[in-house]
Every structure is written in C-alpha cells, then in structure tokens.
Amino acid sequence: MNIRKLIVFAGLSVSSFAASIAQGATELTLWHAMGGRNGEVVEILVDRFNQSQDEYRLTAVNKGGYEDTMTAGIAAFRARKAPHIIQVFDAGAATVINAKGAVYPVQDLLEDNGIAFDSNDYIPGVRHFYADSAGKMIGMPFNSSTPLLYFNKEALAKAGVTPPKTWEEFEQAAPKLKAAGYLALAQSHSPWIFSENFHSRHNLPMATGNNGYDSTDVKILYNNDALKMHWGKVKEWMDDGYYGYYGRAWGDNQDAFTKGQVAMWLGSSGSFGNLQKTADFEFGTTYLPYWSSLIEEPKSTFIGGAALFSFTGHDADEYKGIAEFYKFLTQAETQLLWHKETGYVAITNDAYSLAKESGYYQEAPDAEVGMLQLSLAGGEWTKGYRLGYYVQIRESLYKNYEKILSGQTSVDDAFNSIERESNKLLSRFNDTYN
Image (cartoon, rainbow, N blue to C red; front, side):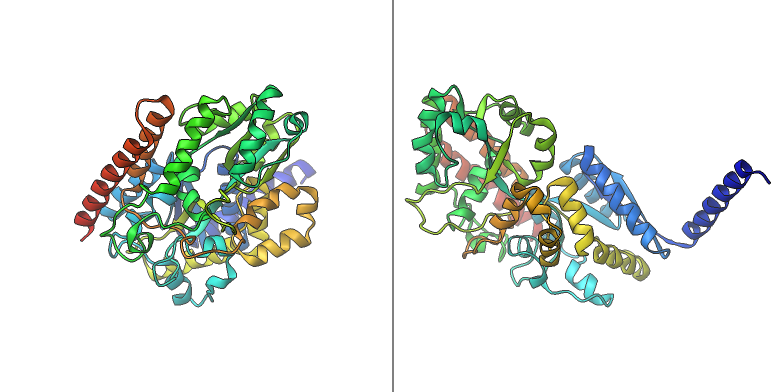
C-alpha cells in the first residue's frame, strides 16, 4: 500500500471509528443565538466537549436572534420537542423561569448528577442574576457582559482630559472634547445602560418585590427623581452638542466611535474583541460613570447577555450529559478560551485567576476592566432583576427615551408613560403566570 492510499485508509478508519462512537452516544442539542465570531466560538466549545468524552454528542444549532431563539424554544417545549439546552437572554429570563415546571434549575441538575455546585465559585456580578430569590441558580450564566466606557486615547489627549469617573467629571470634559472637534459621548442600548445598570451602579431599586425576585405581582420604580435627573441631563448634553444618538441599533452607535466621530462610547465588555479588529486607533476602557451627587461609593453593575437553561421532560441519561457539558463549560480553561475569544467575562473565580496567572491582562489590561467592575462591592439592589414581559418594557423605554431626545415630550411625561405602560405589562404577566 503506497503512502497516499495509507493516508486515505487511515482517514476513513478514523472517520468510521468516530461515527461508530457517535452512533452509540447520547445525542444532545443546544439552541443558541450567537452569530459571527461568537457563533464560531460556540462551535469550538461544542467540538472540544465532544472530543473530551464519547458518551454524549452535543449539536449546536443557531436559531436566529435572542427573541427568535426564545420563541422557538417555548414553542418546542409546548410541542414536547424542546432542545436539551437553550440560550435565553437577560430580558427574557423571567418568562422562562416563571413558567412553572418548565425549567430544571441548573443547580439541582448538577447536584442530582453528582457534580458539586457552590455559587461562591462564580464571580460576584454573575452569581445572582439567574438565581431565584433564595439564591438557587436556575440558569447557567453563559455570555455574560457588563457596560463599560470606551474612550479614544488620542481624542482625550487632544482635548487635555482624562476618562471621567463620574458624570460630574464628564460635564467638565465634554466642552473640551467639543472644542477639540469631537462629540463627547454616544451609547448603545439605553435600557440596559441608562436604566437597569443606572440603578445597580447607584444601588437603587428598579421594581417592587425585591426587583421582582420575590413575586410577579410587582410595580416598576423607574419613575424616580434620580433617573429623571439623569435623563434631563442627557437631553441637555444632546442640545449642547455633547451627546449623540444614532438609533436603537447597537452597531450604529458603536460605528460612530470606531469612525472617530465620538470620543467616548458606552458599550459592552463583550464588544472588546470586535473593537480590537475594527478600531484603527488606540482605545481604552473604564468603569461606567456614576453621579457622585447620588452615591459616594458606587456599586457593581448588572450583567447582560444570556444564560443556558434546560427544559424539563428529558431522560435521566440526557440530563447526565447536560450536567457533564455544564461541568466542561465552567472549567477554568474553557472559560478562559471563551473570555479571550469573545470578550465576554469569565464567570468563575478560578477562570479569573487563570486569566491573571496566564499573563492575559498584561497583554490586554483593558480586557480585565469588565471583570473588575463586576467584582466591585455589591449592594442591596445590585444582584439583578426578574421582571415579566421585560422585552416589551424595554421597547417602552426606547420609545419614550427617543421622545425625550427629540423634544417630543418632557422628561416627566416620558417617565409617567414608562410607568403606566410597564405596570400594565407587569400586571398582564402576573395574571398570565398565576
């Protein structure tokens, strides 16, 4: 047999051997919403899990965007064809968690399958967000991110200013940036950054019922003096030429930064990897600014992104495989790969330690800022929220914020509308799920 034939034969033999393993393995499916590079990294993780053992074979399926994936998952569960694992985004988590009997809590799933679980192994900023009011983790945090301030180093140097720690400092820097030829600030996802995380950073409640963790019979608390003051300031900044709004699309506001039109941009820690590829200037990151007039010692921020949930109704052996995948996913080496390749934070303390020991943050110190912010001291109102129909509530926020910025309505009227519309949605959710 010549070498060429030997290589072909060997290849066929390996393929046949792998196929025979796959035929005997328990099949598992993961529905997710990660596209582009992040979707490629999901495939890498799944491949590595499959190669790490031969009892289970996991297949990842992209089901579109966040809402598409959640809608498909709910429909599949009702048809008793649910995937074993599904990615659900932060705003949709309450819908899945409050559907009684639909979800197998990840903490129970792991412990029932002999895998030790301790929520203290997870970094402070992520351990509570997908937990119930008693602290039991229901969903496994997956692509977790937090809002950061990105800044163009050249622009700030030209204006002679430093990255602002507070919004009061921003107000001092903004005129100088304007004089240097820059719009001072833009941001993406105002409901996440200038609503939810505004409350976490300033340790303010955003809903009754322990931010919705204790009950579905709750009211929104966005119509408060602190948030209205902030949005009054945002409107002033826009009128003075310090703030730019480029629409709801995440990329439109980010593009204004990468094109050098805007000196600073509020985005996600998960945007770090993409910005490294798209920005042709040196940039840095720092914490989300806060109002020193509201709080002396600002708190940590909420995570954004999504978690992995497991529906009920599968076989015991399938749950064993799901538990093994979660064990693989939370290993320090797996989390470090995910952190470095995507920019999402590593969710465990061991992974964070490994990132530091490996020298990653010496190579890319700005990649650590999100981890540091999520590791800040928490407060009474920093663990997260659990509010039904929150996807629709975010739509109300977007709509009314745009009316403020365009001058169609006053700040007071906008927040009266947000309160009315949000509470109507929360009431309907409570009636539906009880």
